[in-house]
Image (cartoon, rainbow, N blue to C red; front, side, top):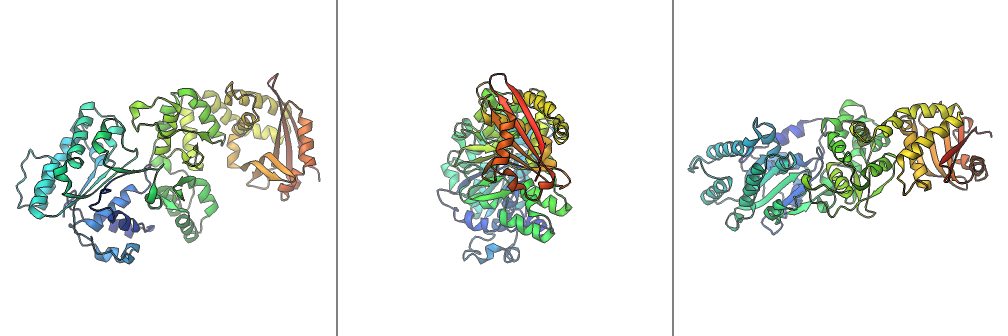
Length: 524
């Protein structure tokens, strides 16, 4: 048993020994169907900590000749598959973690050299009867082994896109591309490979790398096909954990849901596990990602990135064309490129039916807040967010004139010239102006109430805080908005809060660009 060549099942055993283990072993049955078919080249991309490495560990334990995993898998879901034993521990497996080699190479120019040295050492250890010359390439070592053992290889490369994402020298990237080309495009070597499984954050780059890997079928966060349920926790899996640990599933949804991948609502698995183990919901994304990835790109402000970000902070969804992104960090030149890149990183969720993207959940929203604070061209938005707690206090105290003045500033900052006079722009301005209220309130836009829909409802988490109905008007007056709240009986939706309910009316004059506000305490 080697570390890279014919690895053992230790990683899977460790996962099984952990307090929380979600059985994704049915993935083995799906991937086994691709063995020695035209679909045997698989590239899987997902955000960090969405279970890519775990499925790799399942594959290594199941396919590798370096271990006997029958007893382990006999206790998992895959054991009920009629073909369970057909491929169990019958292949030579080559497992490479490019992220590991990159992070552990002092000189990044030595990444591929170090990779070759370690693999050569492992091949010699696993196959002592085969003579491996020092100058052999990885492809040549695989070919020699196949010729001697007549056993095919399964190749697993985790974080395959590391060298591309980390922007190492062009020379190293080109050598890496040549390595991939030698492994996966050679007709002579093809018969030695039963399956190739690459994982990464980004899909295959559509320039020079594409020519090296255009025989791979891609399963991305945008086009997951059958892989959707195996990466991240499904709703049923997350809810079962909440029930087991007596944690609020509604709160779990609020923090970690929001990813619609294929037909499944997918929860961030790393964060859910951390929350269950620590008995506390919170932001665990920071430990796995970096908000610099967001701030560096939103600072570029290609054709309206800033307005799109502000709209999403105000809980709006943004139209995005994901088709033209070339999966290259050197070719991010438009707003659509920026947003598509952030979708792949997990900072946004994308709905293919509507072609809209949005911030998925509370955890990621906090990362966006950090990114906006770090980005240089969002200073007024940061100031607005910082002052939103004071705005709430002014509203509760009935300081209508000061509230109106704050909304003047917010509306100007969040709106482009093109959409300034739209009511949706005013609504976004108000949501953003009250940004930190989310810690105390559930905010519902277009809230069904009475005989219509209230523009914005603020439902307090603590009943000691007042509930609020906000009604918006353009080119009318705030008194008209107050009358509408009463005439259409919007307070009916707040029957549990009628003793502590504020009616807030806002009118915006499109000509003067001035806001008027009236605040009343509801009287039964």
